[in-house]
Amino acid sequence: MKNTIAERIADFIKSFPPFDQLSKEDLYAIAKEVNITYLEKDKNVYTEGEAPHDRFYMIHKGAIALKKEINGKLETVDRFDEGDIFGLRPLFAKEHYAITALTEEESILYGVPLATFKPLITQNRDVVDFLIESFASNTENPFSKEMHGSLYDNRLDVVANDKELFELQPVRYTKKVITAKAETKIKHIGRLMKQHRIGSIVIEDDNIPIGIVTDEDLRNKVVTGEHSIENNVSQIMSSPVLCYPKGVSISQAQLTMMKHNVSHLCVTADGTPNSKIIGIISQQDITVMRGSNPTVLMKAIKRSKSTKELRHIRKKIMVLLDGFMEQNIPLTQTSKIIFELNDATVKRIIERCILKMEKQPPVSFAWMSFGSQGRKEQLLHTDQDNGIVFDGVEENELETVRDYFLLLAKKVNKRLNIIGFDFCPADIMAKNPKWCLSLDEWKNQFNQWTSNTGDDEILLSSIFFDFDITYGDASLTNQLSEHIFLITKNNHLFLSKLGASALRSASPLGFFRQFLVEQDGEYKDFFDIKKRAIMPIVDAGRLFALSNQIKNINNTAERFEKMAELFPEDEEFYLSCSYTSKALLKFRTKHGLLHNDDGRFIELAALTKEEKMKLKRCFKTIARVQELIKLKYNINNFM
Image 1: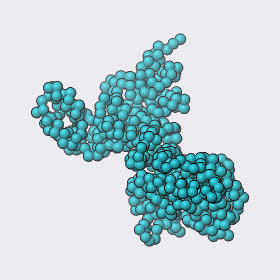
Image 2: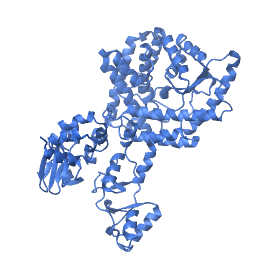
Image 3: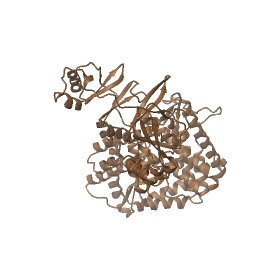
Image 4: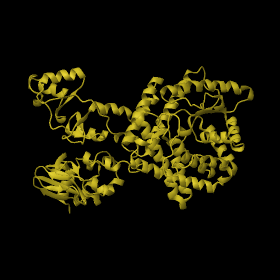
């Protein structure tokens, strides 16, 4: 027998997210378990500090205010009405309520049991999207400051594609806000908009937003004759103002604008209308940011017609990276997306440079990226490390073929420099004849490095053993890779020397557990995170990959994850190495973006105590992996 009450509930909730993404059967299954609650005005649904209920709530009729105690006074931080859900985040985070939910009028609430709803997360992708992108309010945002800060954060691993990652970025708001008083004449508001070429003005009282007026208000309320230009702006402004704290995501801002049919949001110190104005978000800001969507950027790269265009796109890639870092997106997803965009950029430059050559390549070739780009770990603007491998030719044709590829490489290296990739100080670039070689020449080069190994050979091996094809014939790089594993297999002498090199950078902490800093030069008293922390863990990952014949994996974190698979008895240790590599790279990237440099040198005085503690935990892992290398590769003979 059908449950008519459940049918009515299902019929109501199906019109609102995330229930609008569910099947009729799932809707009915939820509706049967819904608890209906009637509350009079000014009644608590739950209070701040209370243990979470076993269900979250949807408003069938009425309105709910979310309130928080600020400076001893209960302040409204958000409001909800028919169709909105609230009280969801504490259930997933398994924490007490951080706010009080109070009825602003007589209300009927649907209580949805988490036990019934939660299994749908793994079954319905669109429901996952909703939970990730838009929880009940900004104060219950699952990506709030309280849940930020972990270098080892894998919380967002459920995010599967670049579109979702883009939507989670914080909106870049306008910080220079033009304001006016409530008693300002409408005609003066119009003049301000014309003078500053803007479409909105925030009306404030003691820097607290009390209203907002837009050019649309002028068109609809003044030009029509409804109000005189001599009237005060308070007569046409929209109030109260919809406010959010800085860090509000693109999806959340856009959904709020759509829901309330507005084109602007105010950014305030604490996200409420009761605090200082710090910025304004417009629909235009979001439209502009959509130009930094990874999919949009990829399309723009592929159809770009000039180096100037690519340079502009490269700047947008950095904006995208900054957004990912600020929103604490896991480094695994961030690295993959930035790598693909960087790789596509280089590929597009090569394609255009080949068109500028007088003729097509005389033989098959491949453009190789070395170092951090070869490991898919290049996030910031760093220098170029690249080379060319081309198919074998007769001896009398070799230099002619090489000259063609050197000219091509010169064009490519120059354009890469223009868009932001500095020339390599050590000249490890394809335009250098030493790194523009035939397949046989490359094989001979690796033979020399692994059989007649000195300090220089070890240094070069640490750069060239991590390579990835960016453009061209993959069979050439595959053959080269197979050759490397062939000549290093059971090559204990070379591996031991490689291991000794991995220990050249001692533990980043000194005898008294203090950070080891630079003693002189431009960066005196700064911490070199690349030399003292990142390179030791990268070197260890490469060493383990070669000695265990781990093929087709160049990324440091992934190399350690593979080691965890191969040696399950030490899984925890190898996974900690993987986490450490990602944490250090993320740390460097954040500081590089903050100071607009490559993030290599860190000013210790600028670090918080929490940041120092996290780094020291990483250093403990580095010390452990170095001890393992000493034991495993008989290093004492080479120290």
